[in-house]
Amino acid sequence: MRNPPSLLSLSIDSAVLNLARFSDLSPLPDHVLLDLFLRTLRAGKLTPRVLKLFLAAGKEEVLAIIEALNIHTVLAPVLPTRCSEKF
Image 1: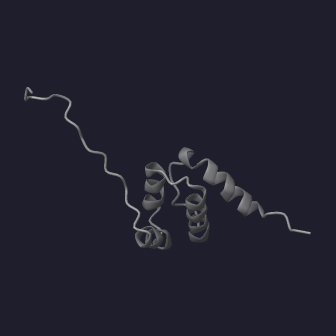
Image 2: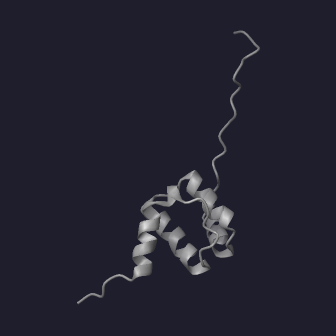
């Protein structure tokens, strides 16, 4: 018979589904943040906002994986609100 998942594993799974509601991930221990990041990638939930949360946490292992996978933040172009030239 399989063992039930641990409370930590269930918590991380729940966090993956609700990452958009978080404002700061830096208080999380390194191993939890790393597991959360990897599960976020597997679930396809890495959005630009979620990526910024992981980058702001500043944990070396997560930053190394982001760099190794060549993940970058999306820079949205700034479009002018008024056009001084007439076409």
